[in-house]
Image 1 (cartoon, rainbow, N blue to C red):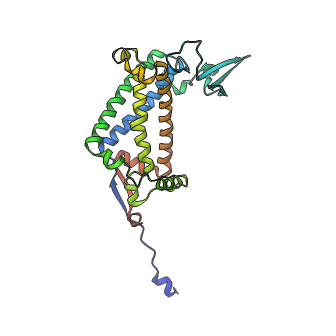
Image 2 (image 1 turned 120 degrees about the vertical axis):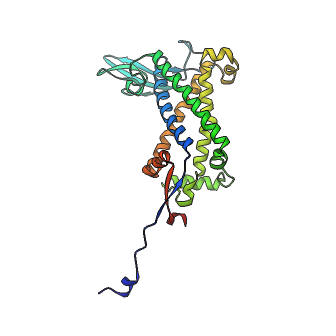
Length: 286
């Protein structure tokens, strides 16, 4: 026979899910176009880099000039050794960078065949792929920027408040992310401070540097806008800046994708496909 406590204690009802509109149609479309563009820009960019896998600074870049970064290969008897050098620091990277498998045999190649487009060595084809998706990326970026400016996305969703950038709040969010504690309920309706700062750095620092340095590497653009060479310190410096910003974006994407998985893959993917993001009534009361 059940006790009085058992009869009077009913299990709490499961929290009801509600859906909020988290991403607009324009944000979702431009996001997925960016995914396509950045993937093919990276792969074609590695194809282009393979033609001259070293970086210089200033207006120099002849073969005999010292480089500050290089992906190289060296012959050691019958073996091909791949290395990455940054300044005086050299790291062996055989099998991935400098020397990788081509038709079953180790061969000199800065970035491996599976990572480049096209997979075989073809500078002209790599440049065509790169230029096409670079302009698509720029046009898509202008659409997103104009929409965000006119529609208030920057002001409403990305502009950090004084409370957001307070050192105590920043430190609190860093600790929460390190412990994999992500915003819930009403707090999940908006970007947190770390997201806002990361997106603003990408939009207003990394992307302009990547696009500007990319344009500076074009002799045709330099002829019409020679001041770009002064801004970026020469074509070789622009190439180095382009390389650094491109891989900084790759690092951002890796962290971004990791956070998508850790904070709820299905919910995040649904919000970026349909715009709907799920939270619960229980969470909104916290």
